[in-house]
Length: 318
Image 1 (tube, rainbow, N blue to C red):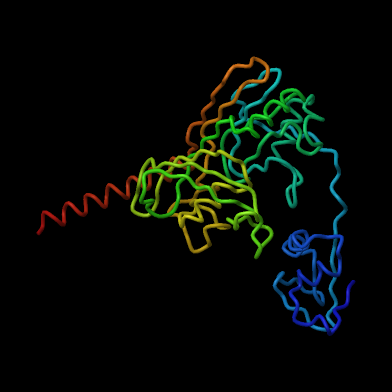
Image 2 (image 1 turned 30 degrees about the horizontal axis):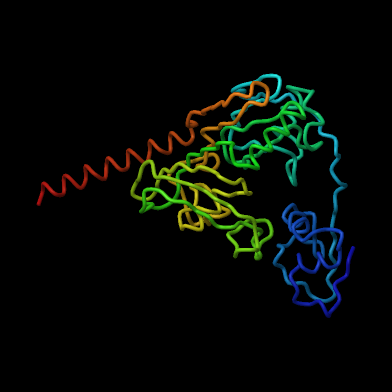
């Protein structure tokens, strides 16, 4: 139990706690507040709560997560498997590896149950994980089954020879046919839980190449190719263009809605290419557009057709 001194009155709760419990980062403090593990005078409050002198703050800090990941027999959609690699088509809603608020039900735990030998490849809680997809993004990712394969695949990522292509539906009509976003990405200084385009020298270089595949009155279907792999890169880059990914309440704002339930982000890792560490041959894999996004596209196409027909009827009446 912590007591707020009068000199601290008016300070944000998360900022005050970060100073009072220095062994916990502000981001971790904010996560604890969101999880209801922080109470002020017995009541749950927001991170933006301004503390008052004399308040009593209770904070429940859970024990650190075990470094040992327990395998879980969860079904996986395996696109390819050999002695060195495992290519998986991840559904939207599945977390790749354990993190804050996601201790179980991860792809990493499912892979460990499927291929126990992957334990010890990479980090202990990220066995075989070469790259990742956001929880609400679906599609292809490759995992390494051996240390040699892990070294090869991570090296391909580093030198940008791994091909990663995404399909996405973004808000608004994108005017130009294609383009490149070359903007550095770093932690958002106003909210450390988010990423943001930051001034040169403040983040890491991030490059996304894109082209328009189809336009609708209020949305655009685009193909995006990653040259770098920063956290939330496509989401942040398209939001910076004024065209956030449909279904993204983090970078698109809650006011932007979609006409049909998406069950995640309108973002799908559709193609993946790399040199197989075992055969040394260039391989390419593709994932069909998932039903949730296909239904969204069907709805948009129907709307567009209705609008064209309506305009045609109006022109004939004149």
